[in-house]
Length: 186
Image 1 (cartoon, one colour):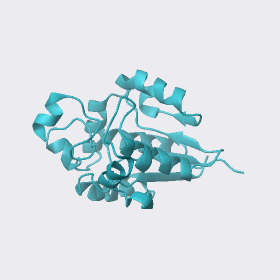
Image 2 (cartoon, one colour):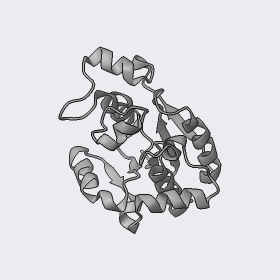
Image 3 (cartoon, rainbow, N blue to C red):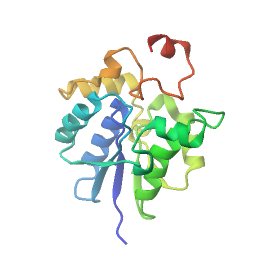
Image 4 (cartoon, rainbow, N blue to C red):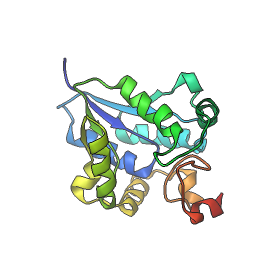
């Protein structure tokens, strides 16, 4: 079975830059798949951002969606009967992690958009997931503000959630958000 490079694009600036770097670095080396786990409750502007990024990547974005829950965090909450606990939000597991696991092949090399300041989170992710994965931003010391600037420098308008003052492009009313600043904006 041949190896492929799977770039997990979440419609955030960090995953966009990580994807672009991985594509450029791997031209002619590995087949590349840019995969997006569609969550219906993210801002609708994400579709525009994904289309702009497709042009920048020079590669199509493959949209994956958990049909059991119609890609909706609310359907997950109703089915699982909770919104979040000490282990996180069930929507992340059902709509993103499960979709990744259903799609991945044992020989895949995965690309994720963890930034340089997220070294601890990246280590935790690697410990919790038995996959061949890289984080080009961590490897290059690229921070989240750097990724915002790189997307703008590419001529791509940032997703609306960033323009509304949020640090990340999560769902509107993200169940994992714990800071007062985030919820004050909501």
